[in-house]
Amino acid sequence: MSASTLVLAPHPDDESLGCGLLLATHPEPHGIHIVFVTDGAGQGPDRALQTSRREAEARAAAAAYGVSDGQLHFLKLPDGKLSRYTREFTHRLRSLVDRLQPAIVHVPFRFDRHPDHLAVNRVACALHDAGELKARVLEYFVYTRSRLVPGGDLRALVDPALLTRIPPDRNAVEVRRRALQCHASQVATGRPVLSRMLLDRLDQETECHLAYDARAKGSKVLVRARSWVPVAVRVEPVLKSLSDRLRGRR
Ligand SMILES: [Zn+2]
Image (cartoon, rainbow, N blue to C red; front, side, top):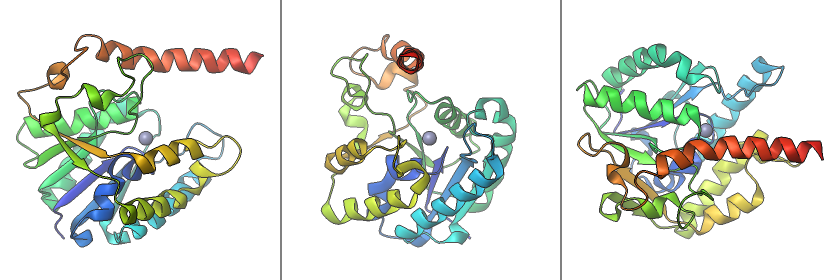
């Protein structure tokens, strides 16, 4: 069992949000492996049920890209708490890459705002820097918008020479839509995690992948707002949870 491409998804749906067009246009779906790092169970009461539900959704979404069950790996580390389990994650990722020998590994962007996403980026890049992951590492974007950065789009601040772009070809967009709809717990009615507005916007956008290079760490890949971006992406979730709480009180 070997892989040409390994996608590290912190949660089920990140594979589609960040790499959906890549997966949909990949010339060899049989060479793709996807690792779902956390159980995606959220913080609700019935974690076991939610874990199995999200696993089933992830399997269905992967099938939409032609990626079969044997190419999926569910590590089931605790959703929202991955930074406390980096040793275990490192250990398990090391044995997976030893076995699969991927040529390319996809990880979330270094300035993502979700702590689980950041933990995945850091663990994979550390393995790469230590010479234990002999693959090209590419960073994908899940949270692309920030009200706190100039222009509002993080991708526009990254050195364009380091980005690979996949345009929103109609067929690929449709495949990704089908995959995203499989994550029914995230797109269902009420207050869905993945809103219709977000999905519609995604359909129009070019998907970007940033080439990781150990010599260009942190802000070195940015062409603007180098010292502000790392601060902004930390402040934003705090502001959001504050405003959510205020809105809830009204
Ligand atoms: Zn996620």
